[in-house]
Length: 178
Image 1 (cartoon, helix red, strand yellow):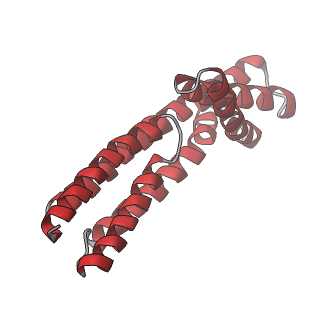
Image 2: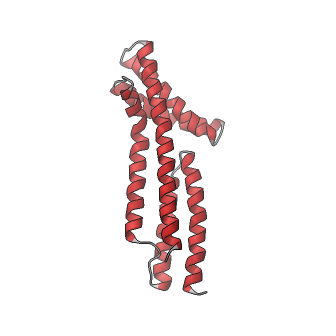
Image 3: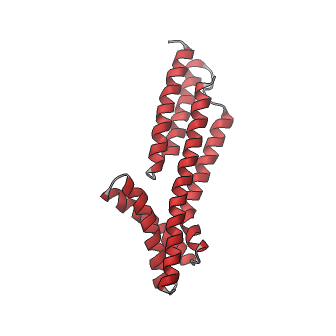
């Protein structure tokens, strides 16, 4: 098989994997990292067999930086949302823990949509209960912090999917354009 045809077939396969990676990211799984792993394997394979690079190192570096940024945003969004709506550190910690537990519980109930809804509901409940029972805030203040945590969690999911789309486009274009 010619190197050009091999690169084209790998690039098309990576584009399909990138589409799957965006979908996987939407259900709160590490789809961006799946895309980067496959791109790294394709980079190594192309270099080993044909002595050329499939991707620019700038593209891989930028996509890795975007993936790290997406993880930071996802981790901190519930806590930031809770604090923006008047929550304390306890509310932020409860929101993070609640989002993780809610995503797991939601995945068990309804595998795809349940993950997203469970994470938002868990962030809400985690912030609400932490604010009410640990920080000793009123129900109204605790509810406000919980609402901020849920909004933050949903916003983080949207931002992460957008970043996943950017990574998918960058990797697909760099793979398809020699």
